[in-house]
Picture (cartoon, helix red, strand yellow):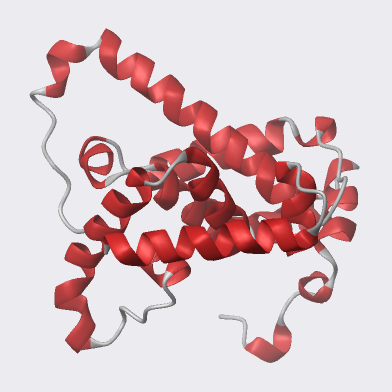
Length: 205
């Protein structure tokens, strides 16, 4: 029987840090709940790190699943320093797996020409960064084009600007956490960088 919203797991209301500690101790139900909670975050991070051209050759879900497998295999080594640390750790894994994929693809370059482009495009990036709703029929037709424009615009930003957008929009860091992560002396510096990055992004769209 399908669970209703009223019959959700008792763990669904637990803090992510509590679930993490339980999962690190081998609690299977906590691990399952943590997986459900992290899946959308990893999808958003993967969408930011992968461009449209890359996604033609490698399914984003493959990257997401590979990252989550790596995360759970190395969960005991993770140290929860602050609320955004887990998301940042996952972002690093996404980037490492993407680099590994690039190396494997270069090693098998002769096979790339035989790979068929994938049909359809994810809109998770534009939904997360721009807050657009691509679920209505009137928006679906424009979703793929907008997604590609956004990815191109993000890649045109410098690394620090992309990083602050990732931390704020995808990892949902507070400006205090962003300041710590990026080496600012106060949250106002992080807030200013984010504002400039979003303004620059808007100009490129």
